[in-house]
Image 1 (cartoon, protein in one colour):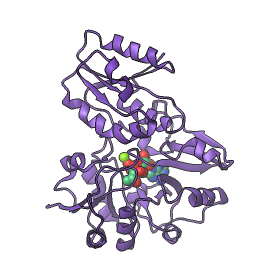
Image 2 (cartoon, protein in one colour):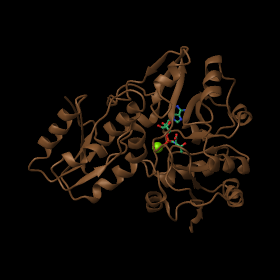
Image 3 (cartoon, helix red, strand yellow):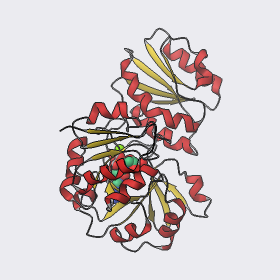
Length: 343
Ligand code: TXA
Ligand code: MG
């Protein structure tokens, strides 16, 4: 299949988005930007089209897709009446980097929900994503644009390598804003359970006077025994082929010293804050930014780069576990396959 490449990097062009929306209506796959990561989307009401997303990604059939909408009426068409707490969350965090698991109406195909009776709803704030949904006139089911197990796609150069020739169109809007996928939540017993941390933090939700729980699989390793609330938690994710290890200490000097000790005599790569770059005794180093926001923005493309360095181990500086740090820890722990040292 020839993939149409739509360049909206330099300028926004509504006609081109309208044209691309026809691909969604025709039952084809389109890769499009959101504020979090790129999505690989299809008409969420078209079961066959959605099955093709699973094929293109090599995604396990029991891992449901989230459905993107651009207005509240569209939400009403696909879910049962939400309760008061769910409404409050929808009204506060939509549009934005936020996904809420709600009871699905039967209009949503089982291929989207992976047979569950719930569906993840997300209203992106990205203008191109919104216009694409508006012109398609249907909700768009879209997981992150990456082959299953790989880091989520945050820029087109990475995405083309995996999906050129496998989708009908790709809209290039340059590097995404946030860089980590949306926060996924579910309301259970009048509390909010975070199933996947993201830019909307535990602290942001607590500010509304709501009790928030962090699912134990977020920082812990899935033990294969219990049923998980979010099937995506079960799968290997984000891990480069090269072995990675995350090292953290609240005392920054101690962290830097420990990493220097660990790389001594090894062929290693260090992924570190810009301000610590000169402190490491190796030629193989990648800067990931200084703030949690910058690190979130860069981390997936960095995880894609590390295999290009011919090294035995990658040492990654860790970060605090609150705020956006929880989301970064969640992704990096998986990238490191839980190879983590805190001192
Ligand atoms: O930011 C994002 O959320 C991006 C952009 C494209 O919107 N999308 C994304 O989708 O990250 P995906 O499929 O890569 O991740 C969705 C996560 C998966 O871990 C999946 O298991 C979980 O949400 N999920 C989807 N539907 C669910 C449901 N009904 N119940 C529990 N978890 C669900
Ligand atoms: Mg994903």
